[in-house]
Length: 241
Image (cartoon, rainbow, N blue to C red; front, side):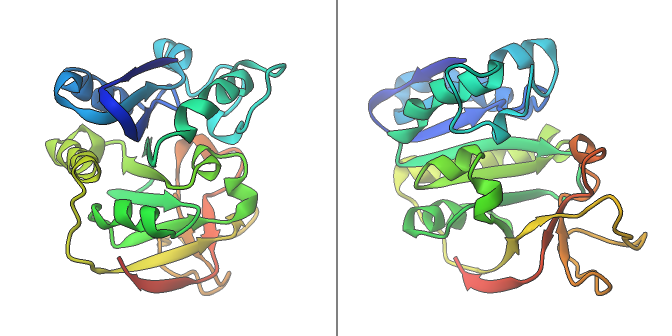
């Protein structure tokens, strides 16, 4: 793990490469590494550095399912334990991910408290995935007061537009900026979609599957294809954020 930070008290921690094969985070790390001298309140964390060097998702286990960790556990369990104090003292925590699913960028949260809403306000997505406690308990964003995962499509992440969006969120949080609120749909994720469930061929993220009574999220994510078909939300609420 590599940790660097700018001047002053840490306001924002940006976690990059929690999964070693999601390289967009490393691009953000490098971008801000060059700017840290002029930044106040920013901490950068290149999380699973060994997995990143090897170009794999993880060494022993999914780091984003390993929190709060264990000092006697495997590589990711120990790493999660080391990360806990590094993320706990930041007001905001952004966790950067990429996916093969057909989305542009979707924020994932565990709560909708005041600080979480401040971060969400700076994003462009009109859909938000809110994870239930069972999923959040072992995820990074479930360990902090204002944690937001930003899930970018891996092809979209290669564009300048994706980098600009990420920069806008970071700069907005560091500068206390807020945009005009917009209506967004918050999908309450309750669990995963079993491999045995029959999804119609035309099924899309956030579009209701009437036969199952769910709204899917992260369909066709490569990392899930042997375990499940993505996440399921039985409902959503419309919220101005």
